[in-house]
Image 1 (cartoon, helix red, strand yellow):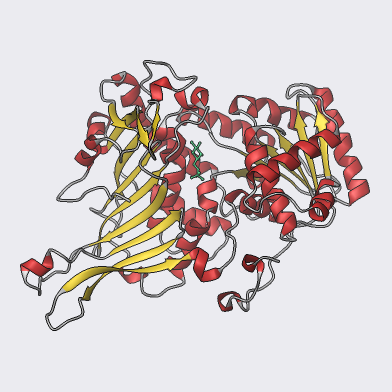
Image 2 (cartoon, helix red, strand yellow):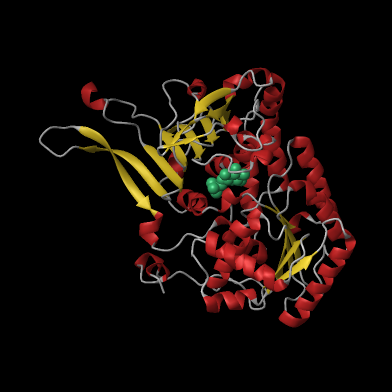
Length: 513
Ligand code: BG6
């Protein structure tokens, strides 16, 4: 047992044993795709390792390539060794997990494949006691979502068997714009009831993001100041050091606004801005989230430039290594106008947030990987200290570090020790890693487990997906018509385009993390 697994940390004493899901089978469509290899199978293995999976748990990989069960198990073992945060699997644990892993060859549009899958699932129910409970994970390119759901419906697999349940997990991107998202939702809801549908947004499941709910509502001190009277503005950043990493084909049609802001960052904004929910029930929280997002002021189509900036990275240096510009990446049009950076300023028109700007930005090939939510408080109302000293005091700032180095920092003014009366800003720090001494679960582990438990809190509801697109449409339409005239550039390894500062008002500035 490693130090991290030990229960000796006093902060963990008294934690109750968590609930276990009912025995079930998870079917992964797109069984040997990138997501299955990097996240899904390693995530399930880690759940098994932490004894969080039910007895009889089974996994079926479904894909077009011919492969034996044994070959699939071996290839997944290699993936776990490569991508799991817990390293190479231990033999005894892996053997138990792999005994419940199977493979089914079938075309995504071939009814015979679904027939074979259905028989395999019945057999698992009989042999491994999975009780007719199924999770279907759509981990294929989105162009296949409709075909797969249609075939699940036609083959009678969309309902659990013998009193069991059936749930479907739909990966992002959920639509390309409002129209396609509405069409996809209609197709999903034609086959499945909304309470069977689990739309993934892995940002919601990050440990620090969930901690936002605990921080806001399990501490009495924040809620009274969590409003326009005390908060000057909010900055939500997801900076990535990586480029498009061989996903040029996908990214060319997406861009930063669709890839990160419309979904992930908007979810973070919803959790910061929502009113206190009445319970932790999935719909109680999601109702508050959607209320906050629906209160965001629509961006006028003729004033998009005052609210949104887009940019693309050019050649530059990252950690002493020269890296190509976006237009030189494989699979990218050398004249591409796709943005790899987007920044947006939004206002929430309600009593709590009137007049408080919410800034969101995300970019690839930025100086470093750092995602955070920064709550910038107002300055003190009266300057008590001499102006020479006042320059050294910054207004209070609460930073929730989403990743890496997960934790919370509160910036305070403190007296410099000595005979004078000199204030300075200092940081009070809480670090997840060192405080609790446990491995944070990967977001996908959490999401897979929650879906098996039937807890949809961290999944995106239909209304949220469509409202998110609705908000972004004026920007997307404007950019599409501008044909690149408004596109700015930033050097790889920088903090993004200077033009992004134009979104800031009254002495505010983007944080350099
Ligand atoms: C994905 C995007 O949804 O999120 C990627 O498609 C991005 O482009 C990724 O890199 C970021 O996720 P994380 O968890 O690494 O911050």
